[in-house]
Every structure is written in structure tokens, then in C-alpha cells.
Length: 305
Image 1 (spheres, rainbow, N blue to C red):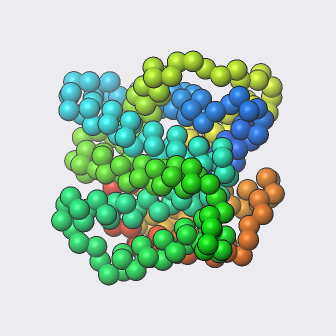
Image 2: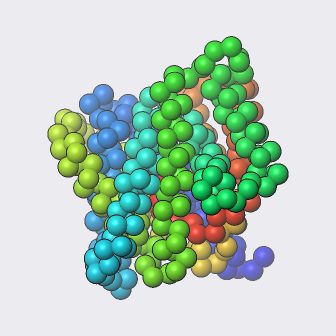
């Protein structure tokens, strides 16, 4: 392994670990005050991150405002924000709020299987045998987590499962919508992510302008900055730069560090009690997704949690 590849792997491991840790900061927010909602976290994070990334892309020379010369590009990025980033982030934070960061990340991790289903249904690309096997293994893993191994009843609320699956669907739309634009290379990934975040943040604010009373206490702003900086700005830059040194397949394999960091952090910080069935189910999901050797080549860094 050469030094550049090792550097790329280290950068993407750090990025994925930070994405997992961001869920812990979000859980800290929800624990700090019952008035803090998933919607507020999503609105504030998307809007702030979008503004900062647009400014950064401007300084970098990516000409972020050039997209408005093309109504088609603007619409694609807007759709990416609304139908990709909103479900992948808002639904994720809903699971964190009513569950924990570990189960939120594990459920979101099955997103690639929705990509496979979409390709089979609409692009007439039949799933490979390994993909079918991995889908069955992942389903068994999710079912094991949802029941704690007691298959006669759910151990988590239906709402957590539903929001978790919506988040996983968001991973699919988040990947598929900008795929052609990325393949063509007309718009930098930084610009796509920046405007996607800002568009979705503005829309959410317009749809729900009323803001909760957020306590002005250090722990709230520390955790909010953690979600913004540790969970968005730093990992985006690391992931974006890592792709200069490693391919998308290697990047995808390192994604496993996200649920691992979220789970370990939940156990250590929030004293999450994981049963043997939870551990087995989590391993099944992670192994199943990694075994896919994800064949979606256009990965958009920075679109995680």
C-alpha cells in the first residue's frame, strides 16, 4: 500500500467515524432539552452547513452560482436536497431522538439495498445472486435488532423502524438523484452538496418557520456545533479529498466505521445496553452491506449524518 492510498483510507475512516459520532452529539441535544426537536436540528444544521459550504466553494473557485444559469441543474440539485438529504437527515435524527444513534445508523446502513431494488425495477438491472443473499442476511439482521432476538414481538417501536427505513430510502435517493450530474462532471460535488443542504434547509424553514425555545446553555451549543462541525464540515472535506487517493469501492468498505463508532459511542457515553441479539444483528447488517462491494460508482461525500 502506497502512502497516498494509506492517507486516503485514514481520511475516509476519520470521516465515517465523525459521521457516526454526529449522532451522539444529536442525542446529547435531545437529552439536554425536551424542546429541541429533530426538525430544528435538521433545519439549523442544513442551513448553516449549506451557507458555509457555498462560501467555501466560492473561495475555492468552484463558481457555485453558475448552477443558476441552468434551470435543469438547479432542479436536479433542488430535488437532491428535498428528496435525498431531507429524508436521510431528518428521518435519521428522528430515530436518534426516539431511539439511539446506534440503531439509527444501522438502519440507515441498509440504504444500498434500496438502490439495488430501484435498479431492478426501473433500470431493468437484475440483482446479482450475491446481492440477493446479502439482502436476506441484512433483513435477518434488522429483524434481529428490532426484536432483540425474541421473534414474537418488537423490541423497538414501529415509529423507529419506519423512520429508520425512510432514512435508508433517503440514502438511495441521495445517491441516485445526482448520479448523472456527477458522472458528467459538470458540477463539482462540493457545489452539489452545498446547494442541496441550503435548498433543503430553506424549504424546511419555510414549511415550519416556528422555532422551539432552545435553552441558551453551553451543552446545547457544544452539541450543536458538534453536529455541524464534526458531523458535517470536517468529514465532508476529509471524504472529498480521500477520493483523490482511493476508489469508490474502498470508500464504501470504510463506511462500516460509521455504525461502529455510533454503537461504541452509544454504549460508552449513553450507557446503551446491547443484547447479544443486537450485536449479532448489527454484525449481520454490516457484513451484508460490505459484501455487496457497492457497485454505485458515484459517491457524494458529505451527505451523511
